[in-house]
Length: 446
Image 1 (cartoon, helix red, strand yellow):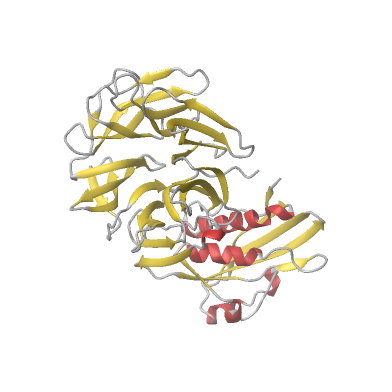
Image 2 (image 1 turned 135 degrees about the horizontal axis):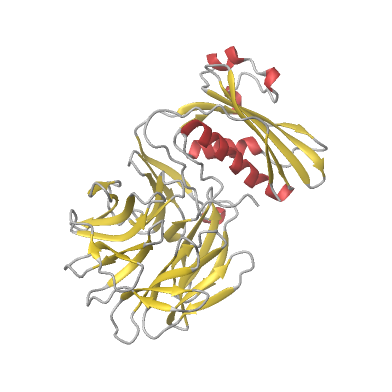
């Protein structure tokens, strides 16, 4: 189990500039993701992450500095030095020669040591310095087993990112997504995948020859709900990731689709057609199976999303003639209100962690782009310019970035990400056909 020991209070320095991002790299190594920088309007901050010193027997068991450096580079905000560019390789504060690093144009410096306590127990110590001011900013110690060293590196990168940007890092988070794998007989195999945010430790949580759709995370990051067409019939399932245990929570007559967990994890919002055949928003208490219908309009109501306080559900409806975003209170009998008016097509709403914005798909003239709706200002901000077929937006848990699915030139589904101010955009090309990404919540340090 992880243990974090904070040895000094950080002297917080928050970087100037626009909202900063922590870039997603998701999906299995086997799928061969390549990150393509599509847009970036700000210079990256130079930083050096020196290879960690090693105090133990044999060679170092893991390259912590390499993972930290890669994480920061993938954020799009930082430009780490290569090892060859480093003027020295200190592992302790007394060894740092600040004038040398200043001449090498490093703005910040990370050094550290990995100590072997026993065959399967290690302590990673690191320090972060402001090179220009020649002062320490923060230092931490993490204890971990051999299997936890990669996650320790991500958590260390999170500490550096937060210290320098003011945003909590998301390197130690996970992504869920669906891959469609074509087979020789023309059929498809559907994989529900879960990976770390840098694409490592990817695994198939569920696979089937029947479609798997609409994954969504529980607030504690321990469960995923999704739609599975077992035997050709739609049902909503909740799966515990650690054990693989799967429970069917809704298999009512007609459509069962689009589940999403309430902020406390006790309920699902979902779409059911039931006896009427009309798609409406419902809530389902997972412990009691008590079902509550929230919408009754003749239009199609779908894609529900909870507000952070759990009092409101946003959803997509065509009741006004075309897809628009509405909201309704979670108590029965409340009237739904339309909130988007500045777009011809607005769909797939996803609420930011602070509840101030809604990421959505904006469609016009057969172009589908990711946009952010400012709830208070009632203003739509377009974030992606290409609009080939951008869909399924999902906020990072720090609210600084949105991951979404797009289409490559060959028509294959790829993952992409964009900062919430639209200034930095990346595409993650893969050999697999990827869709419906959803960014998981912050994980506990266990």
